[in-house]
Image (cartoon, rainbow, N blue to C red; front, side, top):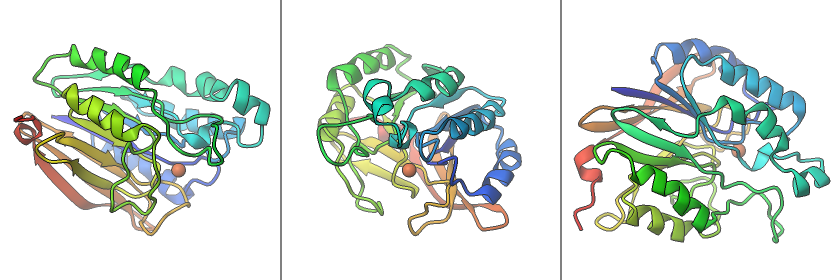
Amino acid sequence: MTSILQFSDIHFGVEDKNAMAAVRDYAKTLSPDLALICGDITQSGKIEEFKAARDWIEQFDAPKIVTPGNHDTPMFGILHRIFDPFGRYNKFIAPLGETMFVDENIALMPYNTARGVQAKLDWSLGVVDLSDLAAKVSHLKAKNPSVLKMIAVHHPLIYPPVSPLIKETKRGEAAVKLLSDANIDGVLSGHVHAPFVVEREPGQTELLSIGSGTLSTRQRGKPASFNHIEIDSRDIRVTAINWTGDKFERAEAWTKSRVDLRRTA
Ligand SMILES: [Fe+2]
């Protein structure tokens, strides 16, 4: 069995300090094989926020997969945002993460959908470079066909209707098609600050989308949370672990047969 902790949107600087103080001990009880952090690790991309994030991430005694979010570029440094948007992320966080996690159940890679600046007013939106994504996916496709293949991003490629935040990721729909055509099984994301599991276009893509909530104080109608993902030879189970204000507890859960994830057409 593979045990994955999926965190996102901790936003160090405005993190939920009580939840973050408790999450380390709770996480140990879940015996993680992988700690996944789907971006927005910091609130403003400040050096002290990155250092706090680094110190927290380093404490997991397990491999890590990390991908940046739109908050992980310097919010108050336009020159940094233009010329070196992920310089601080690359210095403090990137060395902590693996380029790919593979075990007997899953092969998982990060893919960066965040940008420092964009030719539009809203720089917080996600962007996919399809040729870059295709190159990444080719590494996943080469893996054992019996393992689930997933990518980890910050922005949902397509925002689910259940999301408290509905935006558009540039070339997100094309990315979903690319991943589906490559028989990728799922996408793990953050950004919307609420947990969800959605199966896209049943019978066509069967691409499972798993979003994790936030451990920051920037909540959108849902408590602070992270996801516990368990994968065995038969099923994938996703459980939102909610912070009640004084403890973590298992909340909403989804189970999907791995056989059903495979395309029939
Ligand atoms: Fe966020």
